[in-house]
Structure formats: C-alpha cells, structure tokens
Length: 213
Image (cartoon, rainbow, N blue to C red; front, side, top):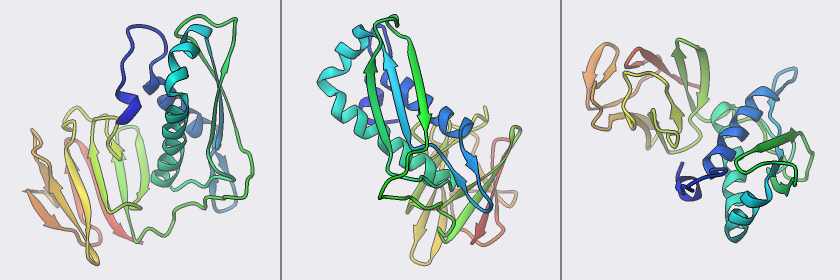
C-alpha cells in the first residue's frame, strides 16, 4: 500500500494497520444477498489520545486513502456497497497507545456501488486456502506478495511483485515482472503472452484461471 500507508512511526498505531483492519472487517461482516454480496461501507475507529495526536496533521488525507481502500477492495472482490465509503477516527481515553477498536456497518447513501460483475474478464485464483474470483475492473492488475498488489498471494513461491495482467485493446496480456521463480501459462514459462479464455497461469503453487465474462 502506497502513500500514507508506507509511513512508519516508532511506536503506536501504524496507518497500514487501519487499512488491514478494514479489509478484515469487510470480509468478516459482508452480507450475502439473493444474488449479490454487500460489504460494510462505514468504519468507526477508536484510537488512543496519543495516536490521535500523531494522526491529526494528516487525518483528512489518511481518511481519504482509507475510504479508497474500501472502494478498491469491494471492486476487487466483486462486492457491492450500499453507500459511499465512510471512515471516521474517534478518541477513546481508555485506550492505550497502539490499541485499535473498529465498528463496521452498512450505511445507505445516495452513492451506491453495485457489485462489479461485468468487468469483461475475471481471474479465478485457486490457493491452498480456497478459491476466489477477482473481476478485472482495472486496466492493469498486479499479482504478488506485496500488500499493495491488486491480487495479494501468500504463496512463498511468488515474488513480491510477480506478474501483471494488462488490458490491451480488446484483449488482455500476461507479463512476468522479473519474478524469481518465473510465471507459467498453461505449463510453459513465459515472459509476456496474450491471454485466451480458459488459460491457466501458475505462480508458485497458485493457479490463476483467466476467463472472459
């Protein structure tokens, strides 16, 4: 995660911890409807007075980036939001430096973000932990172990920034980003190759299937 999330403090709450908490809350408290999944869009963080004082000079920028995390994660997962992302920071005198409490909820608003089910193409990621579907809602999607990748893998065989899938005209192209162990397409190691429906990308022990939607 770039921007303020890369800022490191000597002690206390780290900005990236707030972003990671949002991701966990969205996954844990998503609501499964008849044909759609809706994730919480409002997040109320309680932090200590000491942490609030440190965040005060950059609070507006931090909140804006955290709200973008909500949007990006919902798009990547194909989840909807019943209203615009809302993030607020509150001071709790009873919390110690470094402590975080978070309350997430679904709050309706004028701006409703529909689940991203029509992205033109999707990636089906199959890992040891299970299977997930990622709509290709951006022109460039990065895959790797770094938290700021669009698709984050826990696979030890994956590099920090391993590969990318990029829209090229009416199609999509897979490109290896100088990974240590290489990227395979349908069993063959490739540097850059156009993707066809049903192609299987192998990164470490993870298999990613490309599908036209």
